[in-house]
Length: 241
Ligand SMILES: NC(=O)c1ccc[n+]([C@@H]2O[C@H](COP(=O)([O-])OP(=O)(O)OC[C@H]3O[C@@H](n4cnc5c(N)ncnc54)[C@H](OP(=O)(O)O)[C@@H]3O)[C@@H](O)[C@H]2O)c1
Image 1 (cartoon, rainbow, N blue to C red):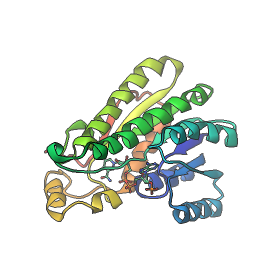
Image 2 (cartoon, rainbow, N blue to C red):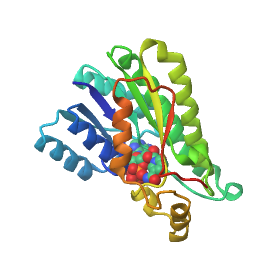
Image 3 (cartoon, rainbow, N blue to C red):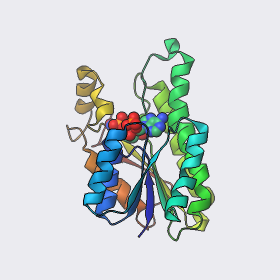
Image 4 (tube, rainbow, N blue to C red):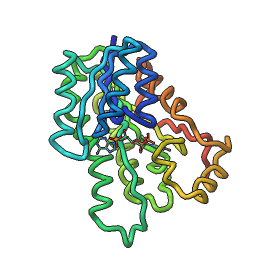
């Protein structure tokens, strides 16, 4: 049984990932930021399903909290085999008028939060038999979308981090890959204006939004032992704009 830490596990893509990994029989370290009620609901669901799990609270934009999280998981379970860096935010605005603090917050959460957490997880992953990291990038990080300057910079940075970690630590057996979802139905995309949603769907070959379960399936596959390394897998329905 592998122990997997999933960040942002109480809603959206992270919740779907937690459910998929539960189905596969993993032991789960379920991270959340502040929604105690959603965290309790998730824990109750996992208990009903007899999935070994524990909840961990942390604001990954806080340097100390992000760095402490992997150690807390290892202390609780005695091991950490895999890490799903899913938690993230977006804050879209026009670059030239966007206050620095707003784009700094996006970078602090998505890029620095993930780097700090991953950095702190490395000594624990080094002891695992088939260690793996999946980093949630975005299509925005591959082909920066309008209004998403901070988001694109952070998610593009995560692709660089993925490639670097994969190249540097691949010889140890550590597998590192990123996922770049396109338009997936979650709270994050529900904030978009209808015209923008339509624009994205018109540019998507499958002509529909993706489901969280479809991203979760990809994350699950990337965590399984295998030969995929350093890749950024697009789960975007063939988005082509
Ligand atoms: N939806 C899409 O179309 C799409 C496309 C490409 C990439 N993605 C990426 O996929 C990931 C999940 O997105 P989603 O659509 O599921 O978003 P979501 O529904 O908005 O969920 C975001 C998750 O991140 C957590 N989070 C945000 N800021 C945090 C912080 N400072 N510390 C700890 N946790 C924090 C949230 O926790 P709280 O509940 O406590 O706020 C929540 O669990 C993100 O990295 C996102 O960028 C999404």
